[in-house]
Length: 505
Image 1 (cartoon, rainbow, N blue to C red):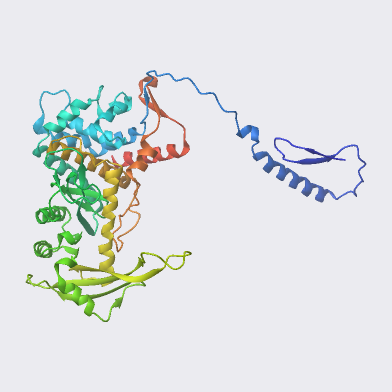
Image 2: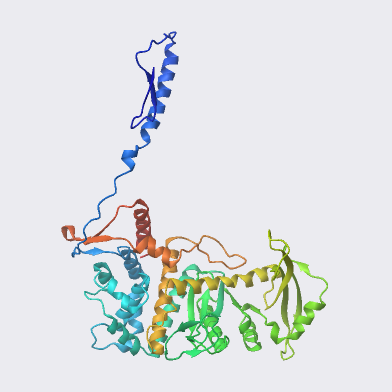
């Protein structure tokens, strides 16, 4: 008679009880040894599988909640950033930016600006959110304070900020980027220029009602940014009200950025990419005279000749399956010299509007989208088009700055105070990129679209992986120690970063 037994280690074992068993013929010793070996092997694999009792547990009771002071930190990963700030001398750089405002105040402006960087690094947006980390012992140690400034103190500092402070902070921001470029010495430096709207629902000094696709009628700022494609960092910005054109003040700002970068790497090729808002003879001629390679989109609505040239064109050259082009040495009537103009058409699907005959599918018809690029680059058309299309990566930087660094928040009514806050968001973004660049060598070379030389994680990913970790501060034998949960992945990442920062110090 067969019976079934279910055990913790072996799932099913069949055995016979009180039944006559027919004797088998004796097997040779070698066969018995092989058979026992196989049985032991299967038994070992069966023992490795956990039982349900070892895996599942009953629903635990909800514990009672107590709040006591045990030197606990919710942001134990800040210890990495504390070491990183020491390596790059961030506190010293910030002190120099506000040295002209040093007075008898308890909290120096540089300390409060440093708090804004930590505030944004932790993921908080509004100034009043400082209440959620004000008593965190590790945050206090990173800031070098026993008591974190309150909202009123931060607001007063922002309202007291002046143009000189903003200028010094912009210089410090550029200095961090230039230090990285000096260390890396890339053969090419690609600068992207574009503006981004920062809206507010209330009145703030320097704002104005301008074109705003998402928030019509809202007052806004419209700063112009210069970003470095190789590192994905913001190099500098030109602050403006929201009712100006994209090219307002652009020529002086563009040339200033180009000359400053050329001063640190005179042998590097400087490249510039811009959209159609910056297309004018002053900017194009100035870049060409500076020896800068550029590509600029051309606005169709300003030149009817371009439409006629496209309609009259019979033969297009193939770039790939969906893109064709032709080029011409052309100039607008008001220009005094010709440049290389690339005419590009891309096959695009256009959905047919209205009722359709069949409900099983939506029919499409093929059409073309056209664009024109002016450039002085001496490379083939395919590489020029790929280079110009790569400027879309700047939109990803703007998205990260607004979503995860809260650049779109307008904290006060004073112009310089809002500029200081925006600079804190730019510092957080650039510092996140700089930390990752210090941990590894460039992971790819120069691509046709000028992608970043490193594969970067977003600042919110760094926040989740490295900062938001519970820990306890203790002093065994007088040595300050922070104890973090023994997660293998976190331990490996923390120790790898500390080793890299120790080597770079």
